Image (tube, rainbow, N blue to C red; front, top):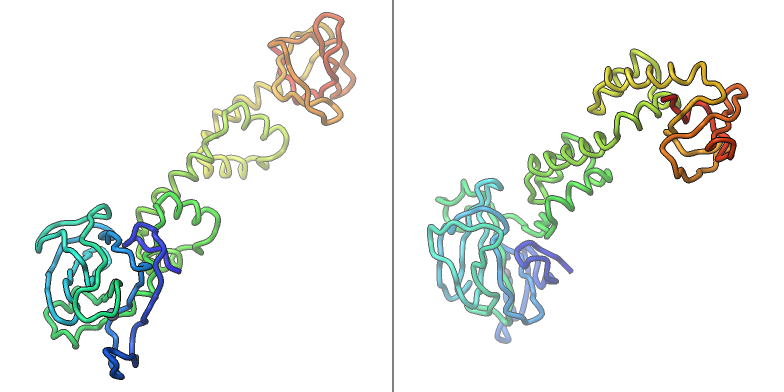
Length: 299
Ligand SMILES: [Zn+2]
């Protein structure tokens, strides 16, 4: 089963592959070279879409391929040939995109049933004789029905290798590499820049960002402002020292000294006791939690 952009993801299947074949037509054994791939549509007259921006190059009506449309795709540098169409809904010279219905699957010409005969050759071969064109097996390209967003997420999930192999694979599958990669970069940048300066400063204090100068490098590579983060780190560390009973503090990380999270109901807490880096906080004399000094900030 194939899900192709041509049919907007509807299920189709190959009924006859590319290349040499022998078949029975009208009771006679025929041997020929098949210059395309035949796709069955479960006998449905399905709309056939252009797969991306292109132009209707040519239309023919012949006894063999019936109603036949040629679409040129400049980016792919290919011409697609859609044969046996029931109805043709486009005109020569018309520009098309992935929402243009060029026609419906049919059984015009020499065919035993409703199907799409899909041929493909390099657009540079247009002026060559029909059989001199470098007809290619379109089925080895997928031209599947994935959106740029789906692809970008697959790239992020490591399903498309790395550059330059990634470019090759994506283009071979019929997609626009630069469009996909641009979205990948946008998503990754957003993910990286998702953290607030406070979150980052806490991560730095927890040792997650190495030490200067490596820290500066890592933070900047991830798209953050190093000096802004480090300034807050210094402020927090400065305020953490000299904490004493009665000081007012803000909880920056609601995790108890033993590692369990707790809920904060107030913006400001009082320090009830300090023992090394273990600080008991609460409201007045009512204890809320024992917390590591690194998780609170003097105000
Ligand atoms: Zn065919």
